[in-house]
Amino acid sequence: MVAVALYATDPAVRRRLERLAAEQDGVTIVGAADSPAALARLLGETQAEAVLAEARPMLAALLAADPSEAAATSGEAEAGLTPREMEVLAAMADGASNKMIARRLGISFHTVKFHVASILAKLDADTRTEAVAQGARLGLVML
Image (cartoon, rainbow, N blue to C red; front, side, top):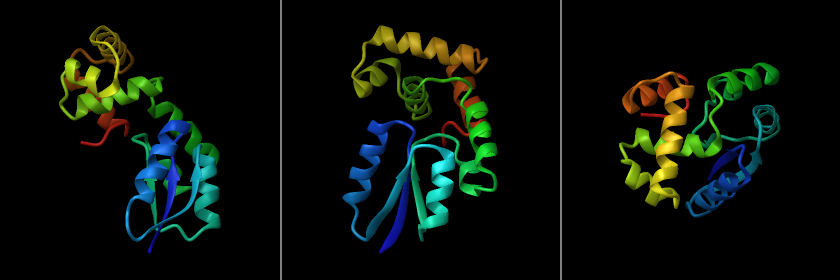
């Protein structure tokens, strides 16, 4: 059995992670956290061998050297993106078109275009590729 801690700031994402982990053979969930500080506490209190986390910057939280520093680093790296913008950025990193993103997230094509424009502005990018690259540099998406 592998002891897994879960981390997600969004309750709905946390529930999806719980379902995902519960479906895996040989995985035991030791707890869930909604902030870097809570994750640091959870890791200190349990024998977690792995962390299953939403696609957000986790390096500072996983190091858990200083929970307040982890929270500050996480906030800076997120560049002010909303949870939905984070989902759109992740889909962009997967190479999805606006139409594909709209279908995947159950939102309109127009709404996706709005989110993409907002992401480009917040990440100071001129193109989708630049936005994904900047997101990767900030730890917002994994390539």
